[in-house]
Image (spheres, rainbow, N blue to C red):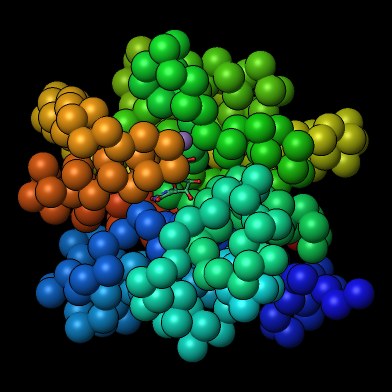
Length: 323
Ligand code: PSU
Ligand code: MN
């Protein structure tokens, strides 16, 4: 039978020779970032950023370049032409970012997308499926993991990211959970799922667009990638545990949004989501886009900065895991 998974030559060679690989998702490309140019350079370090190109393409390229700059190989995961691709070349990245029909796909929807031949960016859960199937690829960088939406008590919108992470032996590097979620409930859920949650050089669980605070302590703080690699190795190899690890990497302080202003922006965007009846898979993209507008681009700058920061830490961890 024809395989439905295509691993790029570069990624498969790297995996065969034990070279560090970092998986990258693509829902951020198709559904998480504007498809228009930024018209200036981002404020965070972003060498090679092309102001004429759409933000979604430039962020994907920036993450790949950042992984490479540290000496690891990026493996961006996406679906098109009836294939689950692991590792895209520049033309494929360009095509995905420019495809107006491409939405996002989660783990449960992957099979149908492959059968129908439609293009889609993979969410964290769908990217984890690829990590597991081809490797496992041990390290994966994203912006913020999906989790329990606010009001989950009345409408149980809980991202499939959490379940999938609970059965994939991959460490996901993220800036915590998105501020639009119920972060406290999300942390509780990860404890239930036996997912180790590690704060990188921080005592508090970060809130994606902003730093965390004392109200949400991380279960474990570690300050070096070698120590984190050690915990991952013991979790998977010595103990044989099936769950992944969540590494929370706070946004750089200079890009962190002021918590009160962020919270009131979230409340306004939530209100308009309710008014327009937005729910389900469209909710996260709607809330992220609304926040970018409400904050006059500050949330977008924060999102770019944290994505690049996570790619950098993920590459360092992937290298530490090969030692
Ligand atoms: N990080 C970002 N932007 C994003 C996402 C993460 O900076 O758009 C995506 C991830 O792909 C994650 C998804 O899996 O948001 C969560 O969506 P949902 O809540 O519908 O599961
Ligand atoms: Mn959801």
